[in-house]
Image (cartoon, rainbow, N blue to C red):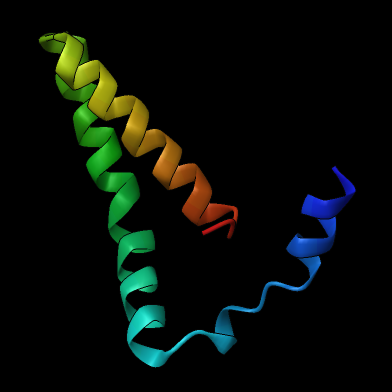
Length: 69
């Protein structure tokens, strides 16, 4: 646990290349609306693939908003 905490402190997004920062910013701004749309789809037509896609999108959204990736 302490290794993760130590790595978390040293993360600085400004050290990334400019093109990667732009992609990350775009992904961060678009990921939540896509996840909400997928959640609405799952409510009306719950298939296994849609549920798995929703879980994957929710995980990516959480990782982006907590600055883990």
